[in-house]
Image (tube, rainbow, N blue to C red; front, side, top):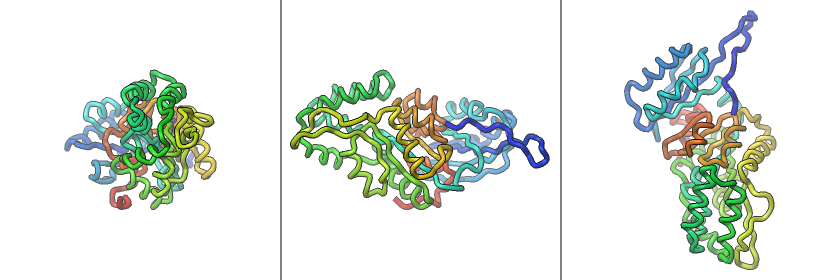
Length: 314
């Protein structure tokens, strides 16, 4: 997570104020929200130099280009909470000038569903596994141990069920638009998941996502053994995968974006240049650079300064 920039040096040798962009997103924004946002920024010592309207679909989004001020994210947090706004503060000039890498969690982020829960339902262990999943995503259980416990309930399940579950999966609204727009602008998309390669790879490849880190299920004959193969992609593993994908693509970490909802996304959200909490648990919202509390994944594009008219068709 990149800290807010301090002052740089002007050509005459005096300290220069660092420019920043403030992105504000709202599903039902009031007419005076922008005016109140300006007031808070000015009270924090910032000067608003420009205002760019990014779009009104799927949500209303604007970008304010500011100079000066202190910890703007903290200054704006009470306003964002009270008015139901999503706000991000970023260094100016970091976006749209070179390739970016956007790394997304799968379950409850890129997908609307929790894959392990759907598999467990097929095994008749749905309620048991859903409770473990909720505890793990909330940070109450170690993810690796909870994953092994959940996968153990799948022992004996026919491999053919994987295809059935994949067919039932629902992409989050805006997911296709996000991926196609990233491709249009020369950006890269990746998925890093505590889920399973066998489910995700056939789903993501037709969408053009070839960067995937996820777990593998052990199979014997035509049945699942109830075990996971190799090193588990957990909270730390997700961050390692983000760093690996960025290094392989030659993208500096400050131009990476991590999007997730659960406790096992915290490390990659902290590592990325911009960490986005997508309809996330409270601990994730508190740790992220930006939040999205709307159900549209393509709203992430507004944080990259991409206006609605440049979104690709879904």
